[in-house]
Amino acid sequence: MFGDSPVELMAANAMLQGKIYCENFTYTASWVTGTSSALGASASVDQQIQINSDSDFVIQQTNFVSWSALDTIIANPDYLLNIVMAGSGRQIFDRPQAMVNQCGNFASNKIFGSLPFPRLLQANNTITVSLTNRTVTASNRADLAFRGFKIFYLQGTRQQIFHVL
Image: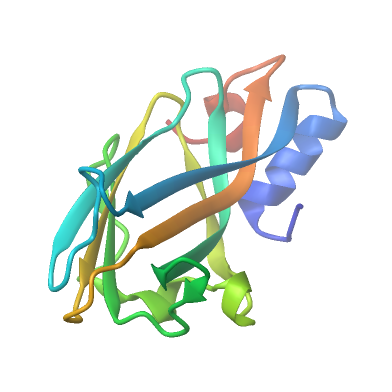
């Protein structure tokens, strides 16, 4: 899906010129009961997402869903989210954000969280996602998805096509 942001327009133009190939892709962080990633009551747990080394990635949407038990969706999870990009060390927010302010949720009839400006991530990068449960109930499972597209360079480089480092 291409929108009308400069990053998406540059990708569409480069793809039409045969300089890159774009492929729909989703990266996910999961917090699962019974694993080291479990999100307990009043707990904060970090997850790392490794961007593949074969391609850059453009995040266009975020989506979040959480379950308190099997087949029981938490409609409005009282969680805080913070995201840090390892390559730049940049936080995406000035402080952790309420999950519902940042992410959509298809499962509870909410629309996905479109980013106001899609984000280009370099290949072989790491995203650290911190999730804080502000309730007294442990999450059975929580999933945060970064939806967008991978970019495979056929001619040229990231710098030539997107004018970034």
